[in-house]
Structures are given as structure tokens and as C-alpha cells.
Image (tube, rainbow, N blue to C red; front, side):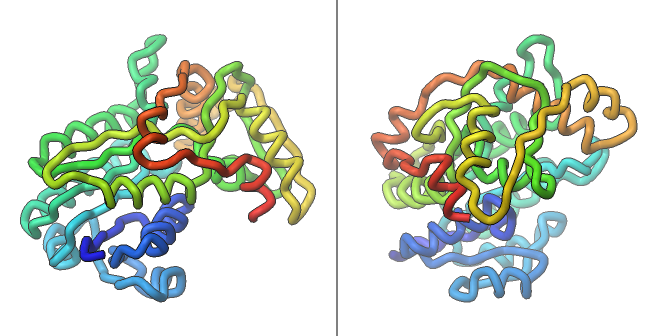
Length: 289
């Protein structure tokens, strides 16, 4: 397979399984990171190159002879609105470098929940950045593949996990379509394999079934085998009280407000037809850890 793919964000919670699936699919993969040694330990079979989203020249060098660059960027819970953001200034630098290096496609991990921006008077600077990132990519003059995922199962064992507890904020009747990151990685690999030269693609990414966040957490906890876990629910107003004092509390309240209220519906039929249907259940995911 001659198409060479560069990945930014490959060492994170979602980046690792996606990079692994692209490697498994047979793509020559280049990992662009600041911490080269850490990446070498995670991906000994990949080409590891130093690059920094704050430095356009380093990105141009890292993207030499690359066909596709896949972006697994995020805004950390500790970031403030005035900070440098990978999905904002970093993305602008990346697009400039991709144009200079002759990259032929940009792949980008976005979000379904960011659509909640503007609903019920909801306005969050993080979602403004994420919506602007999509606009920047669409206007870059480079063909793109943008993926809009529902909730990842990994969040139950990652951002929502605190020791033996899986933390939930409030209760919601909304039923996201939870997906395992490695299933999504297979879809990304397939998307790049079938992408038509010069064509733009957008995909809704949803897992095999819809469940409430509490149902998902209880099923995950019930199937997790390494230790005994419990689901803990905290009222949303407690997190709201901490917003002025903690960026993490502010982030947590906003993302919970969006996830608890965005009226997600099934939209992945075309994605499944083109990229394959995700098969991993919550129980299978928990048991695999």
C-alpha cells in the first residue's frame, strides 16, 4: 500500500488504538510527536518523527512525502480559553505545513456533541473552537475526511475513571451510540482505502447500539475483570459551583451539559455501508482491558 499516513496525537487514549489499526491495515505510518522516545516504545514498527504544532517549519519537515495526515487533536480539561490550543493555532500551523509539503488529504477526528452549540442557549468556547476547526479544514484547499463520533467506550475507563469509580454527572435519558476506538480505527483505515482522489468525505461515527450513560457505565462495570468498580453519580450543580475556581470543573460541567442534552439520533447507516459496522459491545470492551 503506497499511501503514507502521518498521525498527530497518536500517543493519547484514542490515538493509540487508531494508529494501531492503521498500521494493522498495512499503511506505512509516520508518527509525529514531541516525545519521540515514548512514541518509539508504543509503536516500534512505525516511522517516528519529531514535530511540534507550535512550529510550522518542524511540521513541514515531518510531513515530507506524506500523502495523508490524520489529526487526533483535543482540548485538555486543564486548558484555559487564552491558552495555546492544538485545534486552533496548532491546526492553522498544521494546515500551512500540509499545503507547503503537498499533503493530499487531511483526516480529522471531530465530534457529534459539538452540534449542541447554540441549543438551549448553550455557548462554550471549546465547541466554538471545534466548529471553527471544521471550517478551517474545509477551507484549506486540501481534500478531507472528517469523522464525527458519538461517545467512545474508552472514556468510561479514561476521563470518567477515578480509581475504583466510574464518575457520572447527573442523569440523562439521552442514548449515545457508544463505540470502541479500535472499531473506529478500522473505519478510518477503510475510509482512507476507498477515498476518491480529490473528493471530500464526512462520516458520522456511532457504535452498534444506543444506551444511556448510566446503562453504559453499569454494563462496563459489570464486565470489567481487573478489579471491582462502582458507578458514582454526582449532581451537576456541584460541578457547576466549582466552575469559577477550576478549569477542570468548568470543562466537566460544559461537556456533561452537552452530552446529557444533545438529542443524538442514529445517522451512521451510510458510514456502516461504506466503512463497516462496529461490532464491539460494552461487555467485550470491558473484558478486553
